Image (cartoon, rainbow, N blue to C red; front, side, top):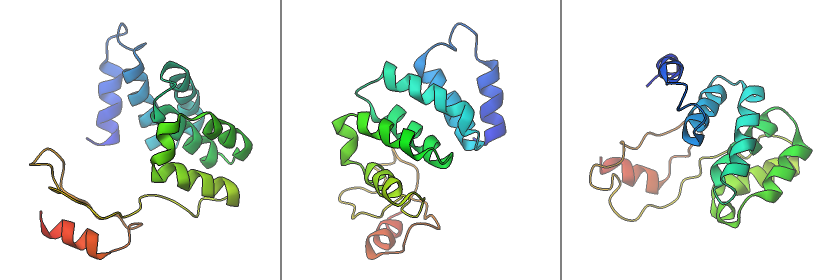
Length: 145
């Protein structure tokens, strides 16, 4: 779904559903895809309060703040993130970006995959990204598709 189509669907959503956190998450994601971090940020910060044990609000709020150059605030959000988020590469990328005060360390990171690359057809096909180095693991996974 392209961004214009996503916005149309969000605008067609009944008002009674718009207060639901999942709707707010999709709305913030659309703002972020539009590079409108100022509008996405308060929604993500609210999701941090709504879902304090979920990484989604913290990761995205931190990402917004980093993209806005608000390094100290981003660090404060990251410091409040739940321990489950510390396992993700994105957390370590955010920490490194905050340490360097720039965006040089950006995901995704290639990791070896074990198991079915598409979980028996459940996942979308692997898409190589320009920022993703071509490694044996990536090439092997793409050969399975």
